[in-house]
Length: 401
Image 1: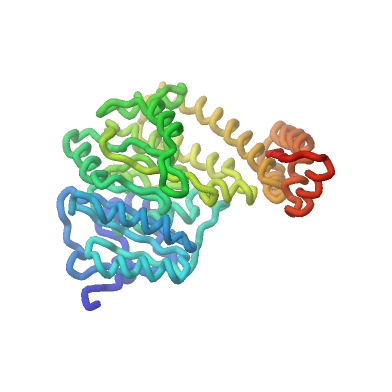
Image 2: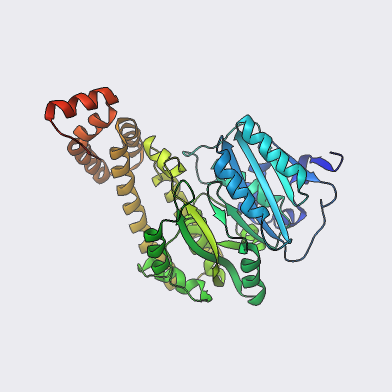
């Protein structure tokens, strides 16, 4: 199509992002993104046209998850408002999904397309080098919306999502983040009612809440927030001013961006949060991927962020205590999850712990390893040997996980 342009060089980074390049962390992230090998395609009819209160959604895809991605993409295209910018990011899609993405891009001038030659995801990368956050930032840095949201390929939105989230920002100039209600769905997109009810009770917020109050509630184990990592939409300028999107969006949405003002909630709009066996966190656990090291780097980043931006000292002290507990609890979860996932994950986790963690964690890990060794051996056996074991023991069903 004659309408399609490929954008080259430094034009991939918007003037808005470059205008804030004096911010050191943003400057580093822009440098990293510029060094990445990707292509940016846009529609000539809309390139460079700034429209007020446009809402940007960044949607990434890899592998062959066509069915999930199709539902996710369609939920964006079905939005009730036209003030929408969609940035599709292909980082290593199989041919079928790649064709589907490009076809969708060709048909809708609201869409920009970022294409990487391969999947560059690296779960073990450091805080700044984390490929997922830099893939998202490639989308962020070419975006033109006043507000931005990252939608996971396996989740989807209610038709009124963008309209409702935009209204929260427009109605309250101090609103820095917005969220819908969260509805849990299974692999088929069917609602998990029980878990949805639990989420509703633990996301007990009003129309607006002060971000500091929300963060303190989270640190104290309150009932104001419990939901997926990718829940909040943000004012784009704030995200750029504070260094872009990062690895720990689960925590950054509260402790980095949410504390800058008010957080709005509209329960008439919904994020459908899908649970399935191929979720990235579940796959990573099987591979022994831990989050101790990047979490530690993120905590250091937040401490520096608070100091530079003169965040209240009493809040910093409370966050310091909270972050230490977060690091310890997260490490224990990593240890237990890696053991339950089998030998491969357990061995990889042990290597990481020996390199970086205090002796107390090594002792704890070895203890759990010894206690759970029979479970790991059983999980590593081929099905035929498991069946033989059941017959020998005359057990109709064995569930050791």
